Image (cartoon, rainbow, N blue to C red; front, side, top):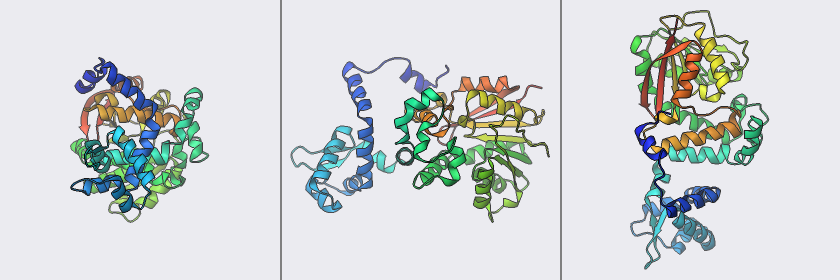
Amino acid sequence: MNLSPALEKAYTADHLSAREAQARAEWIAWAPVVFQASRLMLKFGILDLLRDSDEGLTISEVAEKTGLTVYVVKVLMEASLTIGTVLVDKDTERFTLAKTGWFLINDQATRVNLTFNHDVTYKGMYDLEEALKEGRPVGLRHLGDWPTIYEGLSSLPEPARTSWFSFDHFYSDSSFQQALDVVFAQKPRTLLDVGGNTGRWALQCVGHDQDVSVTIMDLPQQISLMRQQTAGKPGAERIDAYPTDLLDRESQFPTDKHYDVIWMSQFLDCFSEDQIQSILERASKIMDGDSRLYIMETLWDRQRYEAAAFCLTMTSLYFTAMANGNSKMYNTDDMKRLVEASGLEVETIHDHLGQGHSIMVCKSKQ
C-alpha cells in the first residue's frame, strides 16, 4: 500500500503510550455519547455563547442565557470538559471554549459531517453488523424502503435529504474549479457525465466553456431531479440526458456521438469492485485513442492529513450500512487495478483538489 507521507508516519508504527492508548480505547467505547453531547452543545448554542464571552461563563449564566435548566447545562458542560471542547477556570468556575470546540463551530467540513452522521447514518449504524454479514444496506430501513439509498435520494425524508445533499455537494463543489482546469485543458467539446446527480457539475461545465455539450447518464429518477434543478439555468440547453441503471449489466453507454471526455466524480465509490470493473469495461467500449476517462475520487491513501483519511474510511462504513452494502472509499492500488482490468490504463493522477480529491486520467490501451 502506497500511503502518503503523513499517513505512513501515522499508520505504520504505534506512537501512543499505554495511557494514551487506554484513553483512546475509552473514547471508542463512549463515542456515541461523545457525539450526541457535542451535537447538543452546538444545537443549544452553548459553544457559541462561550466563544462570544470574553471572560467565560458559569453554569448558572449559561442556563440563564439558554433557558435550559442548571441540570441540563451541568451534565453537558461537565461531559464537554472531559471530551475536550471546553475548559474551566478552577478558581472562578467559568467555562471557556477549547480549540476543539472552536473547530466544531467553525470548520465547515466538521459541521457537514456531524449533521450528515446524525440525520443520515446514526440510527442505521446500529445495523452495521447485519449489513456486513448480509452485504446489503440493512440500516437504510430507518430512512425508507429502497434496495439502495440512490433510488431513494429524491424522496428521502427531511432532514436526511438536506443533510445528504449538503454532504455530497460540499465534498464535490470544493474541487470544481480545479477539476474544470484539468478536464478542459484539452478543449473537449462533448462530455459524458456518468452519475451526474442534480447536474451541478454539468452546469459548471457549460458555464466554463460555451462550446461544450454535456450528457448526464444516471438513474431515471435522478434525471428527473436534474431536470428540475437545471431548468432555466444558463447553458441548460446544452445539457442532455441518458437515463439508465448501470447496475444492469446489459445497459450500455450511449453511442449517439463521440465523447471526448467521460467524467465520473464521486461515482465509482458507490459500487463494489465487481460492479466497478463492469462499468469501466462498458465505458471503454465507446472510447478511442482521443477519448479520456476522468475518475475523481477521494482516495483515502493519498490524503495529506490523518483527519481526512479518518473521515473517508468511516464513510466506507456508511456505504456498508446505509448506501448499498458493498462499496467503499477506495485506495489508489485498488482503483488502478480495476482500471487496468477493464482495458484502460492510468495516464496521470492529479492530487489535492478541493477537499482531498484526486483525478485519475485514463486512456484506452488500444
